[in-house]
Image (cartoon, rainbow, N blue to C red; front, side):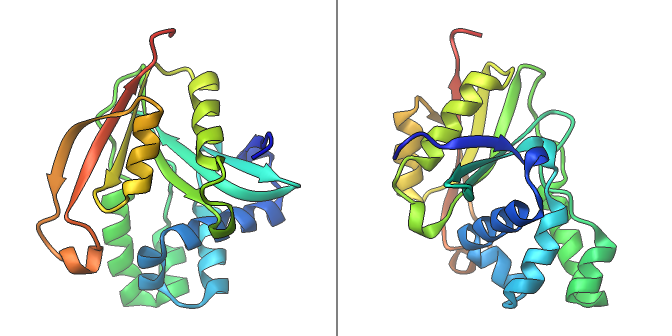
Length: 199
């Protein structure tokens, strides 16, 4: 793929943020359809949930076709609001979803000042396999002020594992999925790490 334009979410207008929300929804269908099957509801819910300073978008011909975010020791990239979840999905269901999502996405990660954790790696269905994730990874390696990069990937996502290994990531830890394996669609998760030697 030719050179993509990489932009921070802080630079995106409302239309581009909507495109980014759609890329996220298409890339995490199990999680998203758990919330709702109404695409408009999901887009309206996701747009304000991005911590825009931690997200970057890959644009092709002005359209968002890929996204990637990172966590630091102080902040995670997804910020879910309980009242907004209850308004979108109902008082009780919204509260249940918020409890699960806040536990999973708001909890601080064990990284140091010179480390970050890559999250929300997503590419639009029609753009997969065309170097979008590679462009975003390379941008992170070049522009973010971190030496060590961590990420988590499930064992069934073999294409992603191969991509990360190609870029110098190695598996440093694995964790069994003990509950709801069938519903989750995977058996274990791998934590992978890459250390830059030039920083």
